[in-house]
Structures are given as structure tokens and as C-alpha cells.
Length: 109
Image (cartoon, rainbow, N blue to C red; front, side):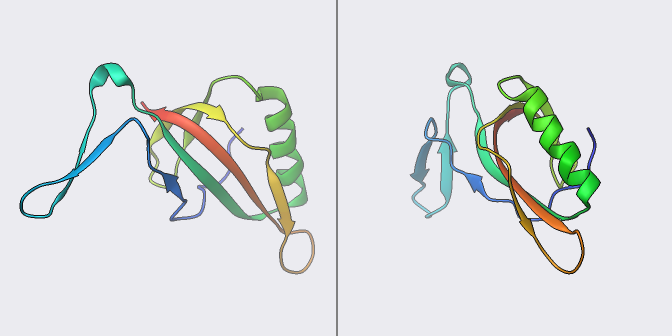
């Protein structure tokens, strides 16, 4: 399934497998070992979805829950991972326009 790019500025959650430290100059440095793996968790929002796009997203969710998927973010980067939360919808504006939100956990490929 392909939708427009998600909204700019989606919320990224810090990975707890990363050590955050400050240098003597006060610069924030993130340290992690390749063997630890690195996954990012973030919430994704889409706005201005039509009724057809909303139901297509519901079908996509139901057919792919628990399976690895490839996801493109607003910077056109590709992520491999899993949907982590149920998709929620809000009706916005006149007519049948919707905003969708879901959580995703994955690694940059």
C-alpha cells in the first residue's frame, strides 16, 4: 500500500539501548555497539485521508499485523519493522477527511 508521505515532524522515541553521554564541551554523544542492534520507535501521523484511503489503511493493518513491513518516512528513508499500536482515526474538517495515527518500531535500511 502506498500513501502520501506522513506529516513532517513525527515523534521519535529514544532507544533505551543507547548510552547518552556529554563530552567535556557539553556536546551530547550517543554510544551503542553494533551487536546491541538499533531500533527506533516512533508515532506516525497522516492527515487529509479520504474515506477510501482510510479503509485501505485498515485493510493493510489487518493483513500485516505481526509481520515485517517496509515503511517510508517523510524524509523518504526506508525502515524495516513492525506496527506496534492499533491505528486510530479522527475525522477532521468537512466531509470525509481523516487523520490516522499508529506506532512503528524498526531499523533504517
